[in-house]
Figure 1 (cartoon, rainbow over the protein chains, first blue to last red):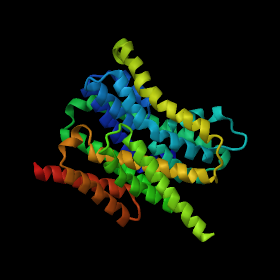
Figure 2 (cartoon, chains in turn yellow, purple):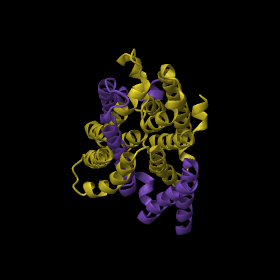
Figure 3 (spheres, rainbow over the protein chains, first blue to last red):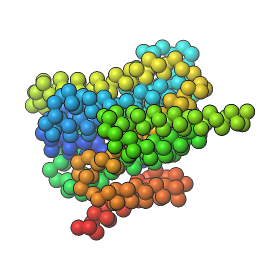
Figure 4 (cartoon, each protein chain N blue to C red):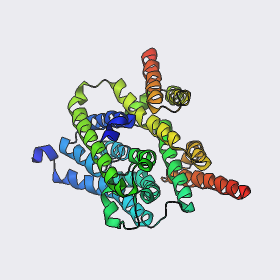
Length: 226
Length: 114
């Protein structure tokens, strides 16, 4: 729990979910609905996409496609972080709840905090961190929903900028190897180029390409060293 | 209670268009990730791809901004993030300093533009 309080990312999440609560209010969703989305979806960008596409009159199918594409990143995140948590005795079902909690914030915080936690306690630690962050976000969603009518438009723009800022900086802090740095830089640079193709899966194409190039450089350097 | 949650149809849409599209990827990750060793070389590649996809999400929000952020001029969005990154590097990687600096630049810029 003290880890929840100690990270600035908690503040960022709080403000982001204030924004999501306000957005849901302005798009005429019920409070229960948006709280349900925080609990079940648990991914800021996906919730913003879901609320804004449904709010603008898109069909549920269109919204589902947009959200599915945005959620692809969760797959490599879960694959890369779970091995840090498990012990040889761990069964898949023990990781179920921890897996649900994985989103950007928990992903970067796991890399930062889990090495300090004894391996047997890492799943419990992740549950605690996830529940703490979720509680903070549920409170923020409720507050944002209630305050929506009183929030100035400038505030909305500032909150929306928080997501890219916090994602960029927390990922940059997490870079451990040359492959991580390259993946971040190439990923940002490639997306605007790939997005001109309008494939609908631009992020997937630019991400896999940039990630693979970054890994290739890592592999080549390791081989040159050996 | 029904007023609190709204119509059952809206909740069904939440599960089908919000919950399942996210949870499918998490569960697929659980299926593959639970069998991979921590020191495995595959993980270096998977982490690079995860980082690059996240980088794409960052770029997308900046290049194709949602909602109220679209009302901020391009140069101010890029400038605010760049200023935040510089502050982050100058303060030995303080996320707090970076976020605060980026937000101040955005707010000051918007205020200055009127």
